[in-house]
Length: 77
Picture 1: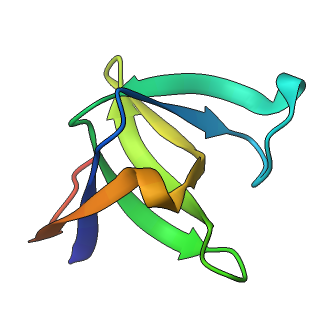
Picture 2: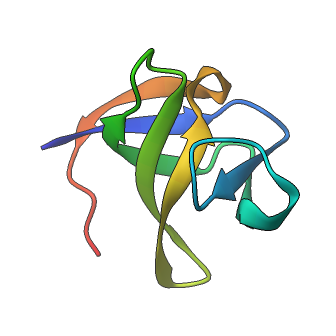
């Protein structure tokens, strides 16, 4: 079982590192997109997440304050 979260922002950038830099944006995910939390950085401001986008697994970092807890479930990849 994993905690699932929903994107509450209009769009949320997924990054390769837990910081904002021009060259570390992987992609963005839309509002209401569901992600699973894999881990958190110290201070809990960045989360490493896993999700599915365009039928492919996607892993990266997002700013945690743009996510809201959806519930407990299984995410199948």
